[in-house]
Image (cartoon, rainbow, N blue to C red; front, side, top):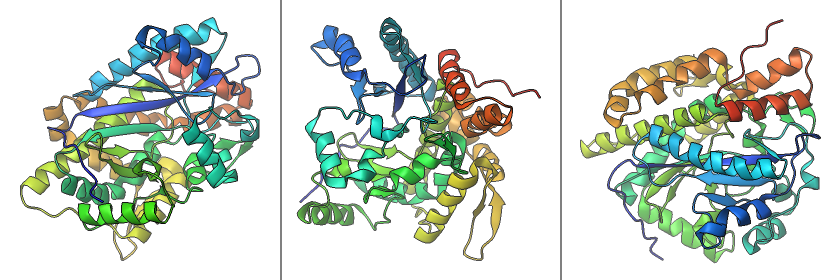
Length: 382
C-alpha cells in the first residue's frame, strides 16, 4: 500500500510540548485536562487548535502552527502557554514540564476517555499504564519521502546529543533511578518505540508499514513511536527523543538544532552526497550512555571503539552548524545550547535540590517556577 508523503517546501518547524497538571498542595499529578481543554476550545468550535489531550488526564500538549524559525516557535508556544495558565490558575492548578514526575505513582492516573488511548491500554497492558512520561516533539519540513528516510538514518547518530541536552527524568516514584533520562527507558517498553529502524528508502518504509499493519502489530503509522520518524501527513521528520524540557528557551535550543541538522542534510543530498547510516548497535549504545550519564557521557564515534565526551561532540556540532543557523535565523537559539552545557540539564538541576537537602516536593516547586519564569533555576549555593 503506498504511503503518501506531503512534501514541505522547506525546513519549516513545528513543536509540541507535553505539560503536567500539578496540585500545588500535594505536588502530585492531578486530572483536569478534559475540563480545561473544553473551556479553551469553547471559542474554537469545541477544540482549541493549539492545545490537545494526551494519554493521561493530567497532561495537556501545546503545539505550534507551522513556523519558519525557532524563535517564532518559542513565541507561538509562549502565547498558548499564557492562555493555558489563565485556565489552570482559575482551577487552582500549576503547570510544569519534565520527562517524569518525581514521585506520582502511574497506577493512580486516569486515562483520557478516547478510543485510541483505551485501545493502547488494552493492547499493551502494563507497559502502556507506565507511560507517565512527557516529551518534546519537533517537526522539521522535508521536501521528499526519499530524503526523509535518508535523514532519519543520519539523525539517529545525534540521539545522544538531543537526549543529553534535554535530560530531565532522574526520579521515578520517589526514587533516584541513577539515570539522567528514565523516561527514555520507560518509553522503550513499547514494541514500536526506541531508535528508528534503518531502512534503504521510502519503498522499504512502505513495505514495513504494510507488514506491521497486516500482522496487527499496529493499526496505523501513528503507532510507530520511534525516537525519530517520518510523518507523512505533515511532510516532516519528527524528533521525539527529547525529555520534557522545563523552559521554552531550552525547547528553542532543540528546535534550532533539529532544523539546522535537517537543512544541512538537505543541502548535502542536493549536492549528490550520501548521508551516513550509523550501525544500529552504535546508535543503541550511545543512546544508553546519554540516558545513563546525560551530558557527562562519552559516546562511541567509530567501530574501533573510539570515544569522545558528549559535551565536546555537542560543542563541535554547534560550531559546524553556525553558518546554517545564520541562514535560518536561529543563531541565538542554537548557541543557547552553551548555556545548557554550562548550567546543566534539568536532571542536574533537580538533583542539586535533593543533594542540597531539599525534597522531591521542592523539585516540583522548582520545575513549576522554571516554566513560569522561562529561566533555569540558579545553581544551589552550599
